[in-house]
Image (cartoon, rainbow, N blue to C red; front, top):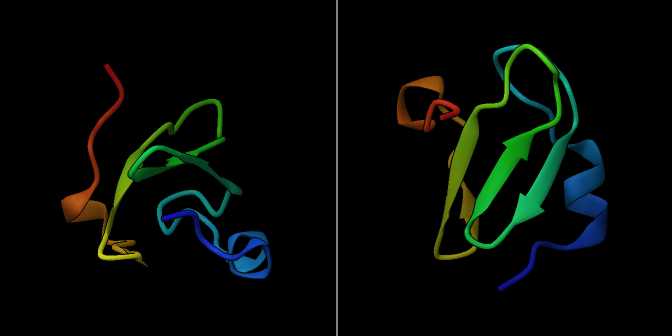
Length: 56
């Protein structure tokens, strides 16, 4: 289930404050040095650094 466009515009990466990009069931940080992937569970973004997947 995609997030509302207005919500995605105001969300930012908690680690580096860069915008987030929605891909499948994750929100990917667009920061060049960050790149964390935050899960979206039941339509709710989990913006906790401890829950984020590190870039490969």
